[in-house]
Amino acid sequence: LGRVFGGVLMIFGVLAFATLVGSIASLLDAFKDSYKKKLRVSPQVFHAIDLNGSGVLGKGEFRSYMLLREGKVSLGLLATIDKLFDSIDRNGNGSLSFDEINEAEKKAALFYQEN
Image 1 (cartoon, rainbow, N blue to C red):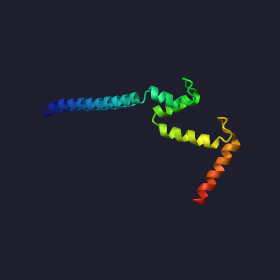
Image 2: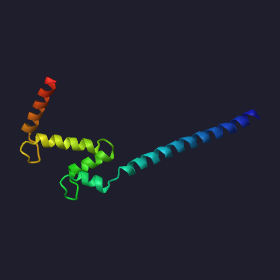
Image 3: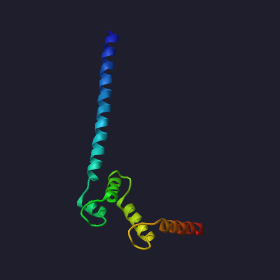
């Protein structure tokens, strides 16, 4: 009689544990879905990423959107990177040459050696 009772309790225990694991998995999925919904593109985010104001995202702009959506970067960090780019782009043509990057790295190295 004890073994039968113990076997029944063991089955209920396994079922209860499986239900607990399923509930935790559902909770984690719901959290992940709500997090992703918060990061879906909004008009404000789209316009912040659409740097040239064309109304469409180029490859670089889409890359920024995906990094934002996945939580890898913030809008603030992207703005800082854009300011850094602009400060390195001496001739203002919107692209960086090897010489421009090399010069900026040398200035940065001198700055950090002095401080």
